[in-house]
Length: 201
Length: 201
View 1 (cartoon, each protein chain N blue to C red):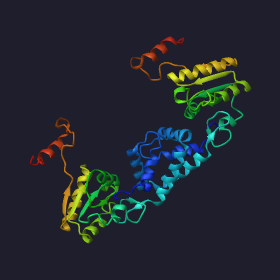
View 2: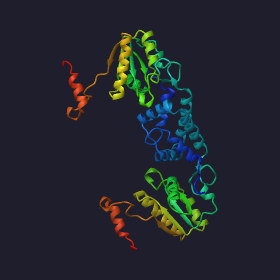
View 3: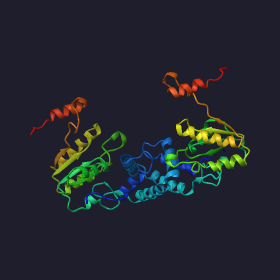
View 4: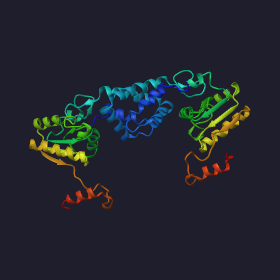
């Protein structure tokens, strides 16, 4: 037998392909890199990964990732309760926190409605969100949801839910992105931006 | 404080950036993927990575990666000792084993000469290779080394070493790649292929 079949190296390469976007060739390159040039950081990665998978769970209130019962934002009594911002993924919480002065609370869907992929209201925690609309003093539900087909469907379902509880719904403005030149915009964006034109001060 | 700073999630993202070609955004995507969709394989990766970094070392004879004193190929008494194939990296051993009927032995440089990057003869194990040329009955040193500037320098140094031990040196044929159309070849490849033309049977 010429190759170390099922060797630790093969197992490492195979295991690395569980990372999104990583095929066998990239996994080989990663394995060789860690073994040859960066064992200390590789060991750190192994330890942190094991620890993170063991301890990180969903915040009981907003479903964001956290290693505690409640995430830092939900546990912070100074955040305003009357604005609730719904996002698809934890990364958007991070982006909004870094780039806006929003001081309300979040709800993380962890996806968007896609019945064909088995992602329905339950998977996105919509019953949990509805319970919050019922129990908390929310007066604005902000939909920070991408402008895709599935995002639009999700936004529609959420707006109907909010209507049942007499909560005002807003959605992030859609239009020309900063630095965007009109001639390079797709026609849908151009149309939306034109229809949604606002008073110029 | 709005964000879980230095949270396990942040540490995981930071640790994942030790992988080659992985920046912060990709690391975030990987972390979310493992946490949300693939915890079992993530745990497996953590365990295999720790184990591999602990146990994989260099074969005492050929420098390839192995978890034993000698790799499978060096430990195989049926491999012929008179042909020694020098490659830059472990991945080429794998490729040659899979695609050729070579039955000799290997020596893995783990790089190529690049004095500016601090990679000299010692780093590539050339003294160890020379000891093998001295001690073993090698009569052909096959240079399976890429045709780059540094590869050419490395090949030159190796051929001089072989000459000192009266060992014949060969290098992989250079020319038109399989399926290659002449009009798309770079001029260096075309020139090399033309000069190296062989009898047509």
